[in-house]
Image 1 (cartoon, rainbow over the protein chains, first blue to last red):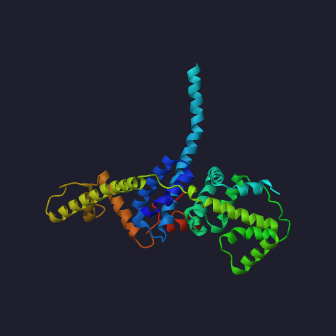
Image 2: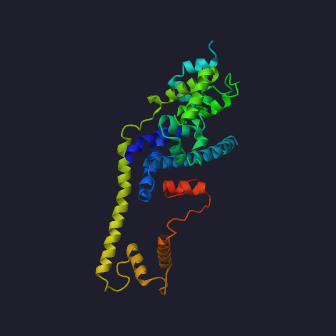
Image 3: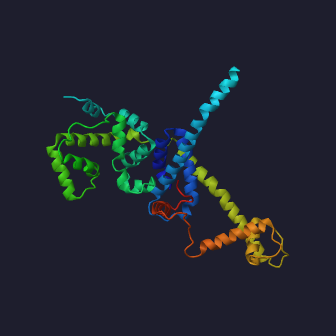
Length: 84
Length: 250
């Protein structure tokens, strides 16, 4: 599986646009793939690993978007309390 | 004559393409990377990206690239009747995925239609720029070693726990004359429950849980229940079986 590390990292790096998050996500995906490897019945391990990386990235992106929605309102409230 | 499109294509330098690709929507970026940079087939991409049909993502990289690099909008020309068809086949033509008849048709059209020929060379230039080594992100120094270490670390506790359970179980086998309750470890508990069988009197919450685990395990081993996929939709079920993930992809 480790020979595919370059492809996995490249994909994660492109999807997250961020070096550190890409590293974290690839590592997370590797662990997940490693745990589930005994159940792997497909023919293409690269596609399988990349699918896990891709899903991890999408989950991360969705989480990031949710935080973006909540952050401005919290910022505004802190500013308001600061001026009062 | 140098129209903006040509100018862009002339200096389709890597930086520009990279900036454009980086700015594309995530779905486009995904196909762009997998297809153009990683060089995967559309079939593989459809599996990875959970796209029902590989046809539907054909041409996405080019579309993403075009939109972001400033080539959006209709190209000049395309006035001829057969342009429409040639354009729709162009990406497959570039991928060498057309059969001989269609391939010859497109080639003949490109020879006679300057607008489509321009489009063709534009796509080729974009493709070449995308395959530039500079666009491929290599893992940083030491990342492979770190990943390996993390994998080993995660494998270690599981192995140790397994060994412990095995050891406990074998001890239980040897000392089967021991009174019940001797050496109550989780592994032994399951073994004991198995031996007593379900429905033993005086069950605690732990017993019930263990019983449920065993029952689920047995049920999962029954033919036809090896995997329950909660869907009747083939688009959900098929990728699930292809990937054999431990979770259902969203």
